[in-house]
Image 1 (cartoon, rainbow, N blue to C red):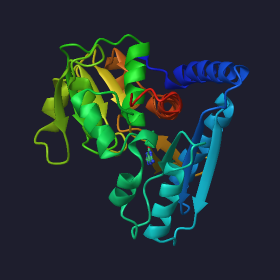
Image 2: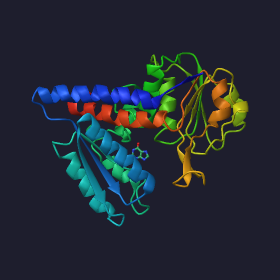
Image 3: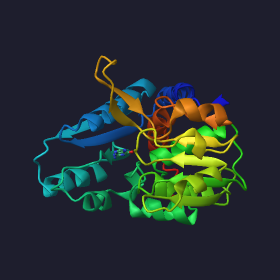
Image 4: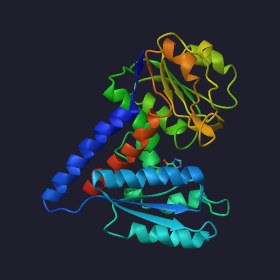
Amino acid sequence: MQILDGKLLSKNNKEELAIEVKHLKNEGKRAPHLAAILVGHDGASETYVNHKVKMCNDVGFGSTLLRLDENISEEFLLEQVERLNNDIDIDGFIVQLPLPAHINERKVTLAIDPKKDVDGFHPVNMGRMLLGLSAYLPATPYGILQLLEAYEVKTSGKHCVIVGRSNIVGKPISVLMARNHALGNCTVTQCHSKTIDLEEKLKSADIVIAAIGQPEMIKADMIKEGAVVIDVGITRVEDSSKKNGYRIAGDVHYESVAPKCSYITPVPGGVGPMTVISLMKNTIKAYKKQVYK
Ligand code: GUN
C-alpha cells in the first residue's frame, strides 16, 4: 500500500511555485495576485481562506482578503465582484462558499468574470471543461488529478466509482475521469444518495473517489483488494481526547481500508493540501493568460 501524500506533494509544488514567482520578480514583473471575498464568520470558511492567504504569502503572490459582514446585501456583494472583475492588478479571485442564506450563490458565481474565476465554478469554465477546452479546473478535482499524476497511478480502462454529485467535486471529477486523456479514460459510475446497492458498486471499483461528507462510512468490506482510494471528505467529529474537542475524519474508514489498497489518500494530508496548490496554479495561469487564448 502506498500513501498518496498530498502534504509532501504540496510542499514540493509550493517550492516550485515560489521559485517561479522569484524568477518573475527578478525579470522586473509584478507577482501574480489572488483576491478572496469572505462573507460572515463561518469557522470552516475562515480556516480555508486563511490557508489560501498564507499560501499566497509563502509562494510570493500578492493577496487581498475582503472580509464582509454577514448582513451585507446581495447587491453590495455583486458590486464588490464587479470591482474585482475590473481591477487590472488582480489576476483571479474567489468568493468563499457557502454564502449566507439571503444571498443567491448562483447569481454571485455568474457575476464573476470567467477569466478571473480561478475556482472554476462559473458555467463557462464548467462548460469548457466538459467540452475538453482549456479551462480553470475546480480546485479539488484538479488536486486529485495532480496526485494521480505524481504517483503515476494508471487510470485508463479502469472502473472509477465516484460517490457524490456536488457541483464542486462529484460532477466535475466524473467528467475528468471519463475524458479521453492520459489522466482519464476511466469507465465512470457516479453514485449518490439514491443509488441502490452502493456496496456492490464500490466492490467492483478499481478507483474509488469519495466526496459525500459522511465520516468513515466506506468500510473495508466495500472495497476491492488493490483498489485506489481517494478520500475527499473532511468532517469535524467530536473527540474528547483532542485539545480542541474534535478530529478531522474522511469519508473512508482509513484504518481498515488502507491495508487493502494499492494507493490511498490520508485525511488530513491527502487531497486537502492539493486543493490550495490548484488554486495557486490557476492564479498563475490567469496571470499568464494561459487559459483563454
Ligand atoms: N467552499 C468549499 N470549498 C470551496 C472552494 O474550493 N472554493 C470556494 N470559493 N468556496 C469553497
